[in-house]
Image (tube, rainbow, N blue to C red):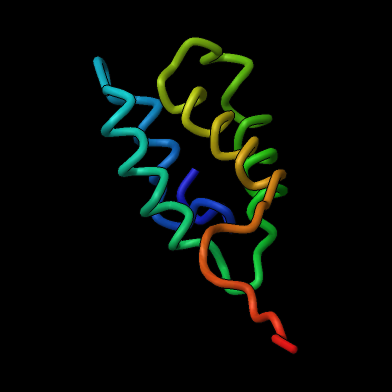
Length: 89
């Protein structure tokens, strides 16, 4: 529902209503949704809450898959490339 603190724009609600939506379109909507979360929001908790709201009625929906993938990535942070600072003797 619009006005939901985790979905102020109603992006998730609308994505689940779109007939024939693709995974690519869902990823784009997911990114917009994630960027619209309140400052300081816990991404993993926000995704979990959204999944709990929609997954039961829409287990095979592409957005459910995108949210599940997002949750896995949000829960497993890892260091990405770049140089580590090392002192040289």
